[in-house]
Figure 1 (cartoon, rainbow, N blue to C red):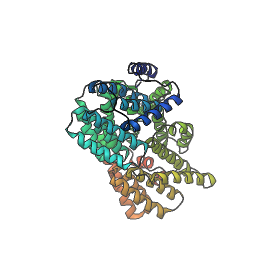
Figure 2 (cartoon, rainbow, N blue to C red):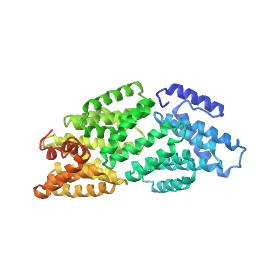
Figure 3 (cartoon, rainbow, N blue to C red):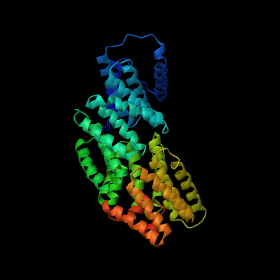
Figure 4 (cartoon, one colour):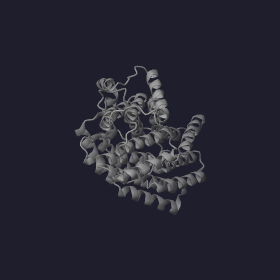
Length: 447
């Protein structure tokens, strides 16, 4: 299923279900009813008499076999993936094995976090589980650390995510057959390095990861390595346009041959839009957004929904900056402001910082420079708390452009120096891409 052979994968999983006496619902309604039944059983189980269960080793084996289907199904069928995960829990229920229980509890905490982005209690529970797993073997500890690192990354806590993901990589490296988990850990490491503004380190790490992914040949690994926003940001910094366009072609081919894999489609759509934001005219990202909005907002999960809101706000800002004063420009700014304000209310400091940076661009385009400077200061403080050095440099440069004079020139010089130190080929153009809406002030020309 991970390699795009979902029909063959589902046929194999159906045989596993039959062998374990489990039902494979044929319709979407059947899957939904199956999920409801498993949830009711799960809630009522403590009240029911204890039934005879297979021995511990067999329960663990059955649960592990069913769990193999979760990741593959999750690439293209979220509802059936949830049903499969609940079956996995049901098979292993009552296990007194500490490793199995910790992994199960960690998975449940992650599901709650991704279902509700504000679930701080589940994050604390996941951190507690990680502490309890510290004395266990590499495979259990590595999997739990991988889940914690992913949550920390999407919560904007890149420094912590980097440390935990590196620890997960060390533990998983010694586990036979953990190739996919290792790739996920290394992807988080690369994303965290980029979020921290360590572009040189991120570039070295990502080149090694891309080479490993090509050798592995897994569809999802190739898609998520080659069409990740991190890969895009690295190649834009070095202005490697030929490789960017080759990746776009590869992403389009994967998307065409595997239309059910919504993550492949989402990644390609986002990559395409941001590529246009750097190289295209100011109206092109919005045109791409209108073509791709069903994909970008049709993917389940609050993490990708937040990313889609960010992409839409950026596309609207770029289009507004190229529009003459009038009703269309006002409408685009109003919509961008609504999206930016929504991001600025998120729990993640990284999301709030990105939202404030967009709000500042809206204010600047409306001619409210004093308010834009206040919002840039707020964005800088939030992004500095996340150690997002490249975004901090962009916020400083934009503030300098608004202030002017010696004070403004000093802020701009420090920003350029920070990007030069990380090997950015064209710092001003890169800043104009990071802080879209300010490109006229950053580059001194309209696009």
